[in-house]
Length: 408
Image (cartoon, rainbow, N blue to C red; front, side, top):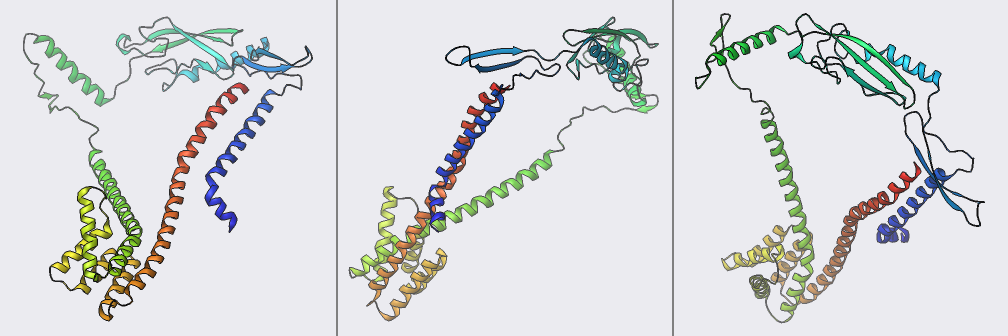
């Protein structure tokens, strides 16, 4: 029980301290693993990984350890390994680069020319007819004849030391059009010819028919089909928002009623103890609240608003007991139902013991108010945990990123 109480009180601090020690342990263990060169070796990067920088301390050269930094190049292929790697790439190159084409002997769509291969091998491409097929593998349809055009595509492979080169024969053809694409192209050409023959006119007449088919023209406006679904989504989101706001408002109202209960009972006890009747004491409480509201000293409080409604009912002729009973039901909390029942009971039997009963109720209300204040404090502390944890995460990133970079 004591441990649970201590955890609720100090959980944020405990988590922060534990996180700090955990972060320290991770960094120290990582740095120890990264900086341990006692085996007498520095690991070299794999093929194509570039230079690895090591920073370490050297003991034995002087009275104190000396800092040392070296750059270790990545591994290199031997001549035999380079020949084997390059040969394997070049042998499979036609299938690797053909893209959506059946083969390099009939190319109608763009090629897929990579600029690197596994193992740190880079590739450079050159075309002897870039107006037909450029060095990026893009087919230029406008300059390609119907019978096809031969293009020599040259690739140069390199690992930084060794090199290999090969020329690939590529035959480029105009892209094969579907029936629908051919019809659209034919109509476009007809419109283009009409525009060239009517340069002095203010507009170009579109053909009404083509090969016996009647034509209708319109501009397609895509992307609007999702608008109805967006409307539905917004409606759902607004409904969820309104429902959430309603629940939050009910929670705030209930919470404020609980907080104000002790004050309401205290004022009733004071006025009734001073000799005022319950209706007169009720009226004085409402008048005091409305005066403070007009002066801007207090905000709207649901308990006093419900008391003001009950006071208006009594002024309009509603019986005192009925108005107070309805006040308790509108508040909807057990404390107010008990208070309205207590006032109604003493209205019938007299007010001889009412002050004492209100005093007992006030003491109970103050204890409840302390419990509510304690719970609100715990909730506030819980809400602060998220920004505190985010702050801790930011600090961990700030510390760990340089540490991780130094391990490389």
